[in-house]
Amino acid sequence: MDNIQPRTVGVCLSPALLPSYNLEESIVVVIDIFRASSSICYGIHNGAEAIIPVLTVEECIKYNSNGFLLAAERNGAVVEGFAIGNSPFSYTEDKVRGKTIVLTTTNGTRSIQLSKRQRAKKILVGSFLNITTLCNWLKSQQQSVVLLCAGWKENFSLEDTLFAGAAVEKLKEEFFIRDDAAHAALDLYKLAKEDIGTYLKKSSHSARLEKLDIEADIEFCLQLDTVDSIPVLADNRLIKLV
Image 1 (cartoon, rainbow, N blue to C red):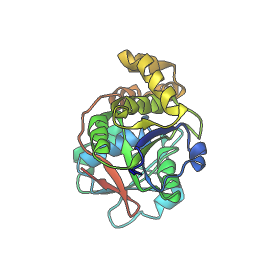
Image 2 (image 1 turned 135 degrees about the horizontal axis):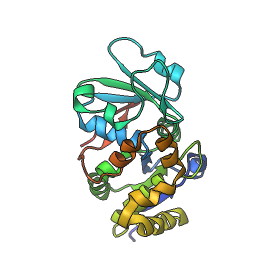
Image 3 (image 1 turned 60 degrees about the vertical axis):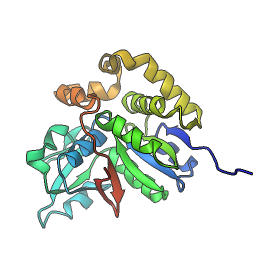
């Protein structure tokens, strides 16, 4: 009798819900569209040697030696005393190639560390920038997938959920949809897919970034398939998987 279990794809709508997931046999894709996961994907694609995600500003400061590039963001803004935060425009090739970046953000790096704490089989970073490359790679694997929305301080976010829905749409023919959150994310994406940028103008994070006068970051993060790299966590360092 064939006991092979079908691969599933699920959506965790907030890191606060992560304890209810058994991640040990799942690939976790961390999603923080505005802006950590987008910038991580862009930086790795542009030749960053590695990105080290840390929880706190204090931990980030400890790396202030040996040529590390330190990056810190809180509440959407660059932390005082740091050169960069998590704007994708700080992760261009001329700024990051060959460098190891130590990064702390309000939501994204925390979600990566929480996934590691729960012993996820593998931890990847996803964004609209690499969505097709990411989903094609996931299809080639035999593990189930959990799409983890970083949200905003553990609250639900539209932009992360829309990305999760877009990923579910690409995976649903080969993966069994495991939870209502995945169905809801897919339905939300179908509602918004014709003009995601306009739909997301109602989101709280878009409003937050607009107040900081960085609307260009929003537009950048919603581009489709501009990179073909996938960041993966290995020994607490995000490096290029493909």
